[in-house]
Image 1 (tube, rainbow, N blue to C red):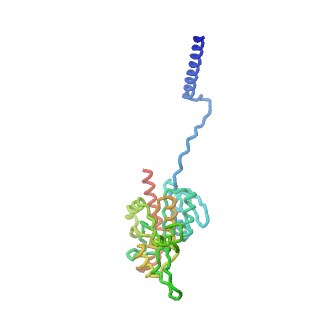
Image 2 (spheres, rainbow, N blue to C red):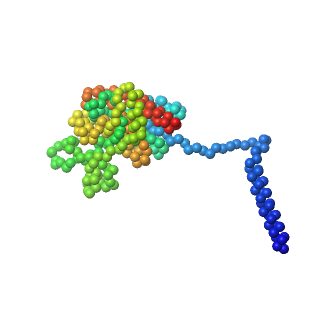
Image 3 (cartoon, rainbow, N blue to C red):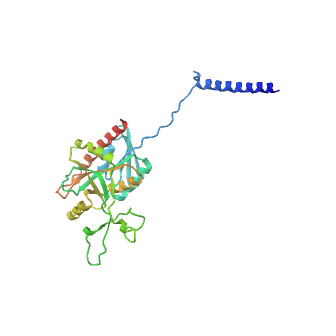
Length: 302
């Protein structure tokens, strides 16, 4: 009985072995020439686009015209031009003017397109007397230059903007104006530009013919300063090279999403040295940013 059981077990093992060998041979054998087939590739991860921002048409549409295969999408006050530059996906965001429009467009753009980096660029007014119309400032830092708290002054004693106190609204979740948390808010908050992007842009400075390319601080706020004493105060106390209305808010949102960011601003005017407004500088700035992006694409493809 034991001998019969042993033979039966051996037969089962032999059948299992032959089945495996047969299946392996079938799997490796080429398909019959008269059978149709199709091979479906595993999907590849899509490239993350680069986002270029400009607030007004003159600050965004030149760059958008450089793209191939453009489609246009809308969200709130923002317009997004999707296309490619040298085969790489680019999104140009016409954000609209001001801190609120820019912050909203940045958040929408991040959630919708998942960019690998963001460059906010456009025109600005000079705070540094050494800078001329046409010069470009790379934002080593940006700051919301309109975040201030006024001292308590009795009625009838007027106002003195040169004694306003900095107010960091991100210092805590408590009040930035009253209570125990207010004292911690009495400081300046700077957002740093991405060092690698600054280095890349600086390396291309000799290719910019309209003016100089320098590193500096971009001050943002929903104001247009024409008071020379106020401009001098901001330049001295905040270190501002230029002022405009967008960069710091875009930097704040990009920081919240952990996305590399750089502000690039051309001087379209500078009343500290009688530099008159020239809107054609907007196109020069976009052309220089295009060189930065082309160099960046070449670097990641190389």
